[in-house]
Length: 392
Image (cartoon, rainbow, N blue to C red):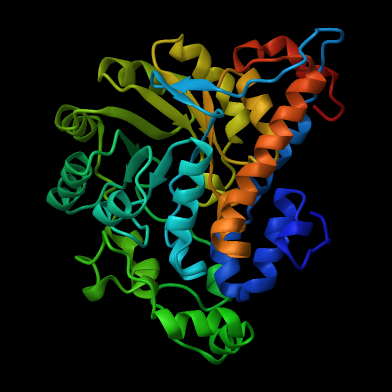
């Protein structure tokens, strides 16, 4: 990781620069909630490193003088092959971060996925921002509550439901434990001193009040973000199974993505259930440590899908070239989470937009340099065989 940390958005030239700004502006405990992963963080690091292991093989003299990033997701045009991944608790990083990212997504013509544990409620996001909205739902032990969230998203006009299936229990994030930001949460000298070290952040919390997770007020009175952050994992439903997923598929009338698919042999039953797509994901390295990197799992899932459903990918996207590599490996599009979170924490609305602008510019340049003018021209032959890369 780069040690360079700019002091303003106009000096942020890559996602790592935005990460540096976010780190500078947030208390350590809060930054680590979003930046960290589970256990030894092997999967967190490998999600990024796996992209670095893939090398490009550009074509020359292709005559591609113009680059068009437009493509289709679920039959609808998007301005680039990117959607915003569901990311919870963003309001604890900076007030209004969820809406800042959603506004940037609308500005750039891509879908925004509202997490169950987002700060604004389903209805608030639809009313305040709009655009192409997807809703991500966790499976809670309280099945009636889960189905009520899904019905609310249906009623509010969300076009796609994302069902997260890789979180039967919460992961163990050691950074949170070491920062005294864990279950049960309590104020300690360590975290109070940490919070006070970032007066702008602390003043924002005082001015606006602790964020409320609008969709989870049934778990903690008032939806207190700190209390929910440290306790909601105990309410996930490890008994959720294929029958439960079928019930959701039957109830939801729109497009449905299943997020957390790593194995190719899980694809066939999803096709039979009538799912519209999958997200190849290991939850950003935040749950099962030692899991295969998302990009390494992608080709097997794409092969098993055989074009019968859409295959998207998340995890490890930090550069436009990573988007290019994922598409060359067969993904229809990618979801990004941390990149726009870092942007929003660095500069709210302008920062979120800066993150997308950086990725757009990097993807466009990569396509130019690889000799392709359209997203559909990004094919596997633009990647070097893995055996030719040292260390593989």
